Length: 520
Picture 1 (tube, one colour):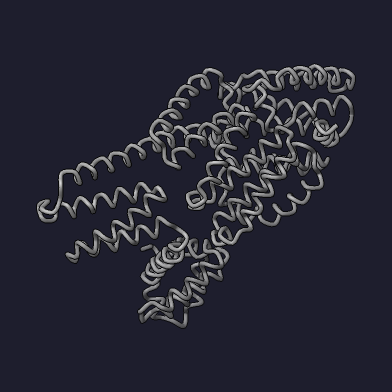
Picture 2 (cartoon, rainbow, N blue to C red; picture 1 turned 30 degrees about the horizontal axis):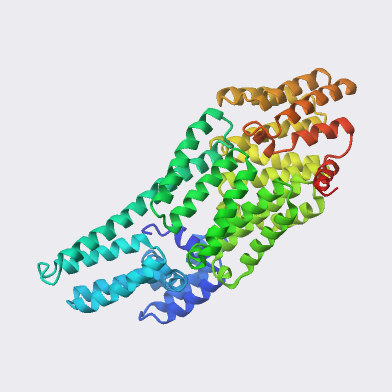
């Protein structure tokens, strides 16, 4: 904050939701400070700037030389005041924040020599922390309990009390150790999913599965906490999802939902968990063509987003909007729902530009690909190409390797549809280089490259092209349902595309028929 041109204060102010902004004004006015009016004036000016503009700020403060002279200092103090207001506001919504304050009070009582007061407050704080399984808070409580035992050379302590405290500490450390192992393995799986894509290497999958099973057993044998049980299921679900084993994924997600429903107080401590489980259940239900379940979980997710508690949490509201939009776009593309697709595109056109900077590379790539696919299904090839180019030009390869790879393939699909045969050789060479460098010579990619080469050789022969498409269609049909290879079809339904080219029926119509098949 020493540099007065830093945008950090502006970024913090712009990140506040309306409820937080109202609370800050009330909180600030209660502060005993002679300069509170200066803070509020600076706050209002920055809150009114969509983009940070230091020169405009200085110009607006031109009649206040006292503020300009100490602008850097005032910005620093306003930043701290905002953080204090946020901590005060969110304390009522966070059990850990409330427990931290109680523990701080117990430490103050200890420092004042009011040991009995401190012990009594610690006892009530520990009961709440144990009920909510706040292990880090419980460790801090134990540290203060140790100090209380040591204060007069243990003259009020008993050997049994010391041993009991030790056993309690070891149980907490064991739970934290299990949670740490589970978090690490879960994060490794998600890192692979986000950066590399699905687990298409059978050997890697075989190596990971025993480790995952061992951690699940460890969590169960230790009488695991809510958090470790949730992490264990989250890790297992991520593993099956990475293999495109949707029946197993749904089974694990349903266990996760049961766990969250069984422990509402603990689940409410992080509502994003419930949101993620519901949205993922909706997605895998759609993949399994269970649309009754899809509607049920989607409805629960929307109800969660509309609840009073969630409205107070701007970040979570953003999280639910992003994941829900991504889910609905994916499902609309999956089954050619052009009407819902148009509605989603209208919503994204309004909101995506303002939130694009807050999206990860993977999520942004997912949106670009989903939008491009929907325009393709609508027959608007130029718009589909525009969004596909955004993905290829803006997203770093190492941040979303799988999506980048399939975006290159979809790029060729678009040029085939537009019959831009002169462009395809260059794009094909680029893809082949990419696959060689990344060691991605899987069965599907090999078949796709062969198809493009065949189409180029028969670019002026419609009958020949149809024959190559038929061959490609049959090969893809043989890959569907084969785990590591069928996961290649998650990004775009190449099989439906091939059948569309063969039958000359719009791909969206074929996808709509696919959704109706189980109902016949």
